Amino acid sequence: MSVNIDRIEIAVIGAGLGGAAAAALLAGAGFSVHSFEQAPAFARLGAGIHIGPNVMKIFRRIGIEKKLEQIGSHPDFWFSRDGMTGDYLSRIPLGDYGRREYGASYITIHRGDMHAVQIDALPQDRVHFGHRLNNIEERETDVLLTFENGRRVAAGLVVGADGINSMIRDMLLGPEKPRFSGWVGHRALVNMNKLHGSGLAFETCVKWWWEASRHIMAYATKGDGSEYYYVTGVPVDSWEHDTSFVDSSREEMEAIFGGSHPMVQALVDATETVTKWPFWNRDPLNLWSRGRLVMLGDACHPMRPHMAQGACMAIEDAAILTRCLEESGMADYSDAFSLYEATRRERATRVQTISNANTWLKQPEDPAWVYAYDPLTAALG
Ligand code: FAD
Image (cartoon, protein in one colour):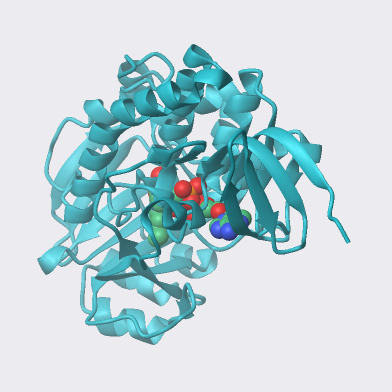
């Protein structure tokens, strides 16, 4: 029995944070785009995310900046503090200062809320959930994609926005598992009654630091202050589980961070449900595209999350890739892909390196090179 083949212009594989941005921007630029996502639907998992002004400018172009500004929290500062004494190590101005100097807001938000806004902004008949890509055949004039559900699609171009275990990356560079970085992160939305019960005033964006770079990044995920979240960074010997995360506990948090500053203790005491995630890594790749296949985001530059810029780099990639395709047109896609890589490689690698080193904003420093960057107007090439 022969299976029908659908023909499309551009397929974006993965509708995560980078893929959803790519689909929106490419469609906005007039390309005919379909997204294919393996998940049957997205859930509001308990985790937050920072979005810098560099990316809020892209969300302005997509038409979702205002909505995200309404939902998210707008910290006036990123504070870094000593986890034992509470001493301030740095106070990086954001808020009004950021809007004025960097051209857009800096927000912290629940990543499920942000992702839902991104997905809602896409033409719903072009987002195909429950489509897990499991075969790619590069042909003379297109790429034949086969999905686990049996559907086959012939696409003119394929954007691999399929995350750290990218199948497009495997296709281009051969299968290779990402490397365990030796670090895990605990993620928790804390119990607000318990947090308020401490009588302490919690800053809306603060990173607590201990020796050997152990840390807790804590922040509000809603503008009305009704949700507070933390993510840790803790070195461990190994990661033995084959799931993407495991349950942790308040007792584990107490064992790691107990005896710290009273505000940290209050965070630990307000912990109920907490999960533990491994951080994976790859060295910078020497190939971002081949033929009609191109990658963005964690597929080509995964990083430890300590600069809060992994998704931001994926979304910046999406903006630059769109501009390059607009400039060259579909027919000259290989010029577009070369220009894209030439524009993105240095910046993404720099962010990846600093993120992995976990030094960002620990001491006073000027973050303008990250936040003031405008991917919609930056020079290409
Ligand atoms: P993903 O978001 O991983 O999306 C990939 C998508 O592809 C998924 O939906 C997946 O289901 C789909 N997919 C995979 N394979 C297939 C297939 N074969 N077929 C179809 N679909 C497929 N970044 C920030 O900018 N700010 C932060 O504050 C921040 N905090 C973080 C905190 C933690 C603890 C972690 C772990 C990361 C953090 N990041 C942060 C990084 C950020 O989450 C990632 O960099 C970002 O999600 C990468 O986006 P992506 O679109 O490349 O990949």
